[in-house]
Length: 484
Picture 1 (cartoon, rainbow, N blue to C red):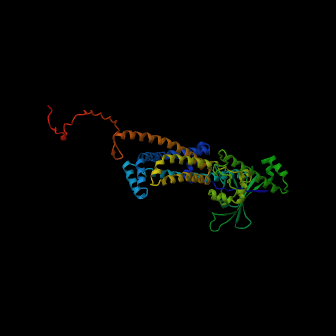
Picture 2 (tube, rainbow, N blue to C red; picture 1 turned 135 degrees about the vertical axis):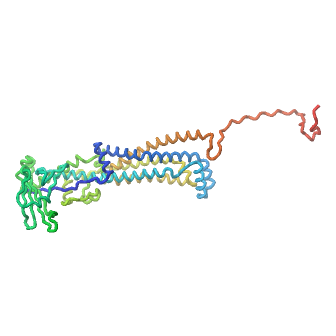
Picture 3 (tube, helix red, strand yellow; picture 1 turned 30 degrees about the horizontal axis):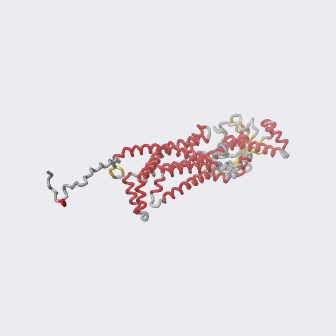
């Protein structure tokens, strides 16, 4: 009889309420990218009140700064060589006009915290989802052998996900002999050594037998060490189980040992089912082959190395039968295209940078006055230009480091931010204009404002007669004399 193997890939857990939320959204939407869109909108709704306060304050400050521009420009000229004194005068002017430099800081900090939470959520979910892919692949891989077993809900239980659980400890503690449970025969015998125990399970309707050898632990009888686990294939049952598929494979093989042919046949089936499962569960997005891997030609839809997979996706092996590099190679053996093709072409990375640049341009335009007037030498404008290019570069780096799903989140978030910025600016502009109209007859910048009044032309004075002598001309000698 041939020998088959199973792969005990650990079932992934979410271990985070954020991952649970993303998983729930993806589940109800039936699509990962739709789930990402909904997750983005939910986060934006959470941060919208804080964004409104922050952006409204920034816009109000910008309008106030434009209103103070003449006086600030005058101060810049007056204190061009004294930055400290300029700052003092500027702060005094800010105070008189109700300008606050820190009003928008706290809401912005909160929004930054939400951004960090989003990064962690997408990172943890991408790790979970890639582990989930391979867990489902391992179930398909194992099902080729498990199809030969029948769960008896006693020694072997079939789980909700289709996997089987073998109660090895229960089998180990049974006495030697033959155990019958729900028409299933289990042979329990001593192993080669006196301290070993060999358990073999045979299904009457299957083509496999489950065989495990334990080594008794004298210190803890209930915790045996598993020396060997194998699944032996009854070659005479393969034809009835797989029909022409088995005969074709057998006849085409150059092997003379039927047991070796049987093992190769089962392995080929396992590798094929594993590859088909990945292609059926893997989520794509337009040109991106795996949405939970970065959009980059330097990355592939799957990791080709087991050590890299464990390190990248935080896989922790909790099974007594550890997954090996050979096991991982069998899972991806028929994924030749996925192992070599690029996962993407930096398109989402570029879109992330461009959308971030657009946000910076809108913000820079809204804060032009602050950048020009907050320093005596206008250095703030140069700093603003630097940040305008630095932020898109930083966002592009994030898009390169994290998954395509995270890049989609950044692009959608930027589009949403631009829309809300225009809306908030329109609301603040309208309120500010009303305030200016109401303040036209009130105190503006600490002085009483008097609306300009049309000046009347001075009346033309009555021309004096040529020989007329002024009544008060003392030099004429008639000053004070009454007219007769």
